[in-house]
Image 1 (cartoon, rainbow, N blue to C red):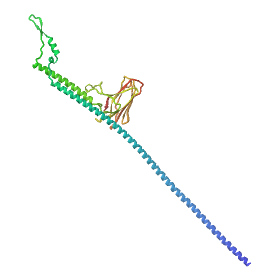
Image 2: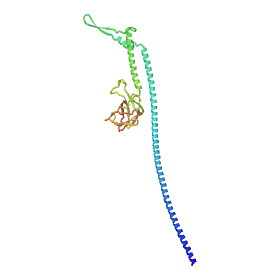
Image 3: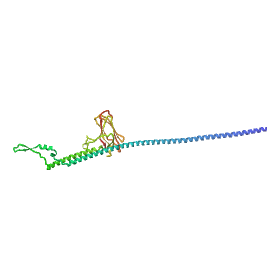
Image 4: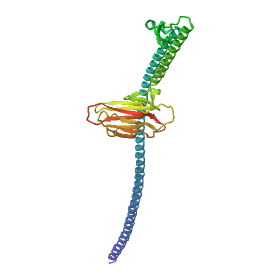
Length: 346
């Protein structure tokens, strides 16, 4: 029995030990579970914080990408504008080169015309000098036929007879003797007449030559390029309300023209002047337009019933290119003439 009690005591002690050990294990298990829960919570918090940080970084990157894209678009727009400016400058340079070549050709033609006029003037001067150096004989000597006719035709004079009746007598004509005062008077009169005639001829020739030598007589505008109009300008001494300077464009059926003008720099006038007129000989219709540096400033349609339009539009102070365009829109076969009367600037 004592041995049995001892065994029971040992078993009871083991049981108590196991219970204690089980309690410790449960406590350890609970502690581990709590640690695990805390670790899970901490991991979730860390993950949320990391995700938030990543989201903030992504937002910042999106903003930066938007700024970079906007800057790239702005750079592309600037590049396009720069290319457009370069193309426009190249076009202007080509246009300026064309104008320069045309101006050189026009100056060469004007120099040739001026040289021709100088040669003709020198020839005329030589002829005048020779004419003035030659003595001019009296009319009777200069025209023998006239002298013969005068000599053959007696001069009839009337005188009164003593009985009161009229009596006719023939008296031979008087021809001045060379070297006599009468002869010298006739010679001087002939020289004066010839000199006056020569001077008048020279004056008229000089006026016409100088006037025709000035190619561009319009006030303030020079022809530059395109369809060149024919120019008509009456001489100064015959100008009037019915004889006025004008440009003419002949337009066949369905024909179109485009003409460029530039300011001649003679003044500060920058208002357009002139009247567009359509020749009423053809029942035509002409669409026309005027552009200053590419900007439309005037347009319209000329017909037989509405055949003129006064031009008074204002122009830019730094005008570089004035363009006149016209286009036949009718179905007639006749040729029409578009005129600009009194063209220029005011």
